[in-house]
Length: 280
Image (cartoon, rainbow, N blue to C red):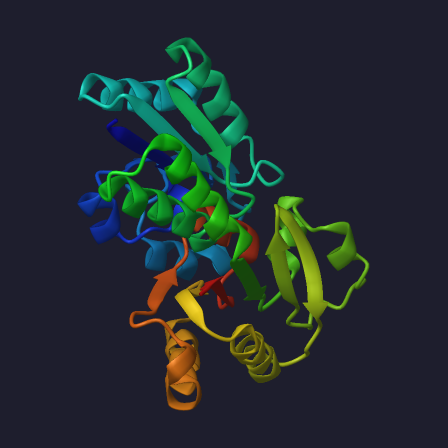
């Protein structure tokens, strides 16, 4: 059985992985001062994060249309795939998975839609697990099991430089909002099954980075690790350097470093840092 893969742009998978496994990526929509952009297509991430603090109106995001998913499903089926798996951003954060599921209904059971419970490489690593299983020639149930196994070993955390952008976007979780007007804090949060939960509330960037370091080390042996940032590459590389100096034996051979997609950055804001890890 030949199985195709579809995901959405907040997966943050590097281009070389997308190309190698022929993954169809449906771009989410970013609206900047009334102008729509296709996430990952016609606006550079560095440009977006540079402009973000000075924008007169807050950017907004939107899910792709159902037609976009229909086109990708049809393309893969017509190219010879017997079945298509779609893995999408957590449905508690966006309507993408629901739209993708609705679009799949016309294909007579040939599409399996999975909402990842995550975003960025928390979702991307589930897609990668599926791609590797498909490359090995595994059957559909085994591919789905590989996705689930990855999801169960997933850990994703972020240290926000501010909660202002979550507040502006209306995505500020109640548990974080309960922190009150402490906009000077650098909260460390966990994303689990689509729910953002506060972990600690350091007041400095250095203490927030230290917390992320401790969380990574506490996980032990890792199969995959991505350091995620929003235009804070120096900070991300500093974290990697410390990890490779002190805990190299627990780390995977390659660590991804990702300037996360604009539609995530809209809600996170610039200068954020985080990680997605899969335990061994």
